[in-house]
Length: 81
Image (cartoon, rainbow, N blue to C red; front, side, top):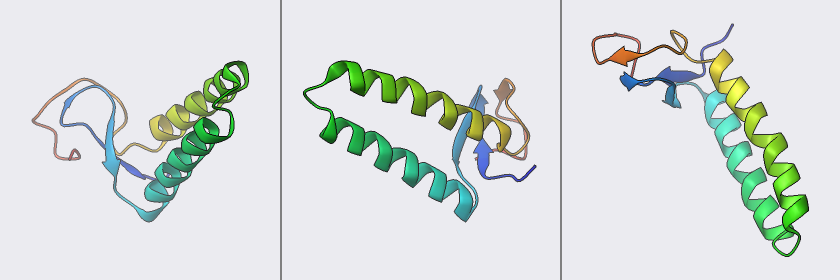
């Protein structure tokens, strides 16, 4: 699997993107969330439904493409940012 995101140096999860694909995924996520907020500002049920769909997809993409995977780190791993 491709590596698009750095792992966090401390804690669990991912950090910043390490490839152009990661930056595209992050920009797309931010664009979708901002568009969602603007377009459905007065429709909280629609906003919530779209958010509940987009966020888990984004998390799974990051989880599957993080360099070194997700695990607890204490600052000693070399594949972190």
